[in-house]
Image: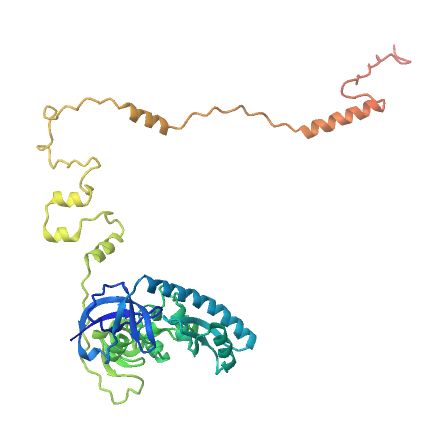
Length: 432
C-alpha cells in the first residue's frame, strides 16, 4: 500500500496521484507539485489515503509544498496573462489568414511556457505564427491541434438533458461510441437527436449498453416463431425495457397481443421457414399478476355507483373495527345519515322523549363573527329609474320641415286647418 493524495488540474476531470512526502493535505487545498512539464499549481480533491501498489504508476511524483500567498498571486497573474494572449493570438491568426479556430490558452505556473489549443479541418502551417507569438511574449510557444470532443470538454456547457456535459464533469477519458448502440437501444437514428454538443454521438449511449445487450440476449428477435397461451404466431416488436413482446397470432393477425418473456416459448428465433418445426401440444402458462391496493381502489372507484371514499383494502383484510374504518374514511359511510349518528335498528332502541337530553342553550355569537358575516353579505344597490327611449331623429326632422314651411309663407296644416262650413241645401224649382 502506498500513501498518496489525489489532485486535479484546472479544467480537468481526471484525478492524479502524488506522493505527499509527509505533508498532511486537506481536501480543497491548493498545492504546488512537480510534473514532467515542471512545477504546476493544482487542487487537492482527496487527502492522504492509501491505495494498492498496482494502481500507482511509478515513479510517483512528489508534492513540493502547500500553496502560499505568493503562489496564489502568481496563479492569478497567469490567468490574466492567458486572457491577453488569447486576444493577441486571434489577431495574429487573422493577419496570417490561417483557417484555424483558437479554443483555449494555458500558461504554465512558472510563466516560461504558453500553450495555445486550436481546432482545424486539416493540417495548418503555423510556423510564422509561432515566431510572431514568441517575439511578443518572450516565452516558449506551443500550438496543439485538438478535436471537437476536446473542445467541448475545455469549454463545457449543457447537454440536451439539461445537465453539464459528462466530459467536463467526471469522464476521465473519451469512450468509443458507435451507431450500433443507438440501434440496439431502439433510438431514433436522427443525427440531431443522438448527437451531443460537440457534433459526435453522445457519450451517454455507452452507459446502458450493457443492460440492453443482456436483455437482447434473453429476448427473442423480430419475426421469431413463438408459442403463446393463446396460440402460435410471429413476434412483431420487442420491448427490451419491460421485457415484453408483441405477437401477431395466426388466429387473429389483425390484433397483435403483448406477452411477458416468461409467457412465450420460442420455436424459431429470427426469420425463417416453419417447415419441420414441431409445435408442442401444451401451451405456455399465463402469468397471474397480483393487483396492488392502489390498483384495486382505482379499478373499483371507476365503476358506476361506487363510493367516493371507499374503505382501504388493507383495513378490511386486517379486520380492523368499524370505528377505525370510519376514522380513515372521514366519517362518511353509506348506512349513516348526514348527521353522522347511527340509525336505530328497531323501535326498542329508539330513545324516548324523557331519555332525550335537553338541547343546550343557544350561545351568542361573538361580535367578530357577526362582523365577518355582514362583510360577506352583498351590499344593496339602488337602481336608477329607466328613462324611456325616444326617437329624437324623427322629432328633429319634423321641426326642420315646419321651419322650412314657415319661411316659405305656408301654414302648418295640422294647426291652422279649418273645415269649410257646409251651405244649407235650398229648394229647387218645381219643389213645393
